[in-house]
Image (tube, rainbow, N blue to C red; front, side, top):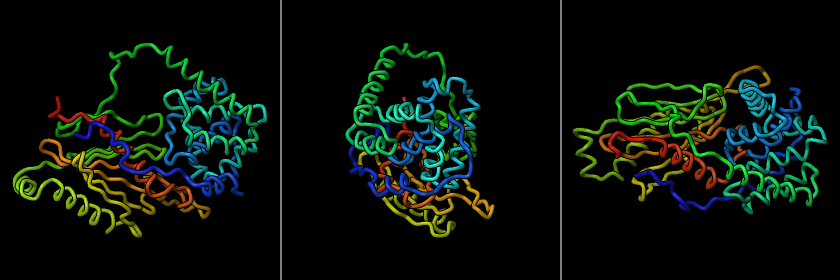
Length: 355
């Protein structure tokens, strides 16, 4: 149960051109000066965020390590750079970061930056039509000609395909860091890195993983016994999970966060799970400093999934941070992104009753 990622449950909608225009036609700028390396990374990062909601910074980081531009960067340098870019986005938005970065980007590095951006969208040795359409618009923003852009995309695809063929067999003796729950009912791969400000907060009934880049993955769990077990047997898992998660959201989210709103719910019959998405203004784990030097929490969508394994009810949650509504995709795409992120995380969990 819950070991396979749900496919084609919802229709995924691409970000609209209006969102693209708002980001890349923005007049905002940052007062922070960027280095050459920061400018390259910033342009690629904005592209990733503009094309894919809640883009994975780890993918960009691994691509940057492969570039000669970042050959002298240490892990601390890379972590500090991404933190600086995250701070600018929080204060001045994606458009502000892009305008500042593009002004600092030398002409001789424009093609390299486009190549780094294209590399982020390679999946199974190809670039999908959606990503190619985005790159077509993005190349025009950078001033890259069609012939150059197409040649770069094909070269990047070929280069990364070659790298995959040359990879050595994985070393299975190298153990991935694991977290063991307080009650011993599951282990899970730790999804955050200390280099990126990763933190683990745990208790007898839950664990929260977070970092300085907005990652939040949380597992809450509750033993099932006595009256609760009888209730599930009589009403069914569907009724129990629906009531359990709705009551939690009502009492712990909607009642405590001003202007919070339940956006979406769905019972996933194939997985015996109940899923919900909540809008949490000022409810993110990251904070931003406003012009008046007031520190406030950023806004976020939070996804929740409740399910039962063995003698425990689990609730797994994650967040998607945003500065303003214009950064968000359609509700369908945001729901799909949060759902998939939770499914991906659940696949790293090994429950104690599993063989």
